[in-house]
Length: 278
Image 1 (cartoon, one colour):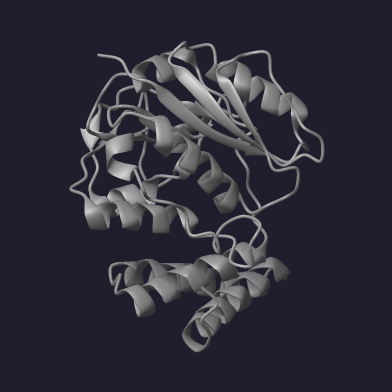
Image 2: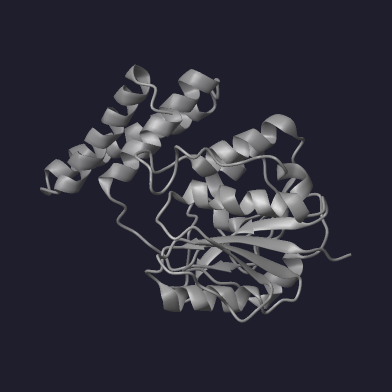
């Protein structure tokens, strides 16, 4: 049986051509409804009655925008419906959205793929045309997935919202997606399936600024100390070890970027221990 798929989408108006491409790809499938949180100064509208616009008309953190849409969706969606989180510069093949609109109790994970660079986002798990669908453990889900790769049944996430002090637009610009997943796992028995042949398209981006590593280090450390999420301890050790090693290697090549990264990691670690920002 099929169900409705609710797409949570927001934009500040800086990528209008990409936004149009994203929405056009979403509404190509009849079962998809888009809840669009408009951060532009002016109101905006779309031709399709399946694009529901919520005009806030100011820039807000991504987690706040997504929560605004989620509140609307939770008020009308059936438990059997599904929710996806879309980016304004991402888009979908119809085959993925048709598959996403089939009723299922599983959390779906779809690979994020850049068709122009022919590159997958996740380097942790090799994906190729011979890969088969399989279950993901909780640990694999946290290592593998980002929000745009996930498709949730409403029954599992109803009433769960993003931490509005985390994520893009905040001082701690990482961690809201992981926190969201933690909250789901705390209240449910989750079954997660990876579908390697159902893609979400998105430009592949590299060269994250060192501040991102501050945020990541802060979030992991905070979660370990304040919320007893001890399996994240190994992620923190890997993060610090990887870039400490890279820093010492970079000394011979004069690359300042690793110095900035390692300092931000340790500052994030220190601030999370000594302060209570979140």
